[in-house]
Amino acid sequence: MESTAGRWWAPGRVNLIGEHTDYNEGFVLPLALPLGMTCTAAVRPDGLVRLRSRQAPCDAIDATTIALGTAGWSELPAWTHYPLGVIREFERRGHQVPGVEIDLDSTVPIGAGLSSSAALSCAVAIALRDLFAPTVSAAEIIDIARTAENVYVGVPTGILDQSASMLCTAGHVLFLDTRDSAYEQIPFDLDRFDLSLLVFDTGSPHHLMDGEYALRRAECAAAAEQLGVGFLRDITDSALVDRLADPLLRRRARHVVTENARVLRIAEQLRAGADPRVIGPILTAGHASLRDDYDVSAPPLDTAVAAAVAHGAHGARMTGGGFGGSVIALVDSERADRVDAAVREAFASKNFDAPRTFTVTPVAGAHRLS
Ligand code: ADP
Ligand code: MG
Image (cartoon, rainbow, N blue to C red):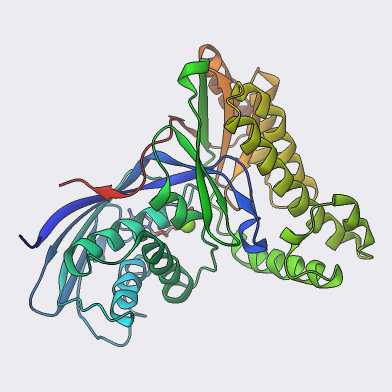
């Protein structure tokens, strides 16, 4: 029987390591969060799209009904551009959408670097797939969701967020090579080692990142060109980076090259079944690199990392693009409360708003609920 309605879910993500590597054709290692977007959708035969979100940033326009094929979206709230972009992409690829009713309800904090946007676009995309285009593959969904963000919203993300939301599996991190999209599920069983992964949403939004992100991409492209390679991913010997004359480009390139090496080292350790405690110092080194070489950290992020590590975390780092957003910390489960309290105290002493803390385990990626 053809499906005409249902509920779908897609998760947000944290990236364990591999920050600012995806647009350099490098490696990433995300996991899906037990926080996600629920999309309730139903076919409409009347050529209309009705969109509603419980978290719509603007209460007054929480329900938007528009005719498919409407040219101008500019007067519609910005968040509607994600689902509308997904619909447009299905249509552009030859899949007809006769009209649809979409109700959204998310537990992913918005703008916290935990990818509420990919949770939104992926949840809508799998709903449209099941309702209108059942042959569309996961790889195409990733591309549709990413294009919705890149083209229709105007955020130039790589494939990390959408791949994590679509491909992650429970109990694993996703080792993804962004050059050819090859991936591997690597066990990340924290319970077995009495470990917990804490996520601190610092509450400082990452909007400032917009211009800086484009700048970092340009700096990486310039560094790659000067080093005679297509992408910084092609540099595996970090000593080669010293050939760059410009000290700024040298620092940028050093972050990317050493970050790729860190991802590979952690993937190797976890693949071999090592106690995840051994990856802690690599996570913290990744933070230092983002802070000192890549200049994308921010005082709340540095404060959370320093407090967590000083109070017994095995490792901690900012996650996401930076300038705000979230920090992850790998801690002994029995110390989780103490580390959390230490981060809260450090925030209070600097007059930062209290962070929101989540204890997360890797869950399955996007799927249908009913
Ligand atoms: P992040 O993905 O790190 O949370 P982004 O800036 O990439 O931050 O995406 C946040 C944007 O995604 C919001 O400003 C909004 O447009 C959209 N969004 C995310 N979740 C929701 C939601 N539940 N309802 C409506 N819009 C949402
Ligand atoms: Mg996002």
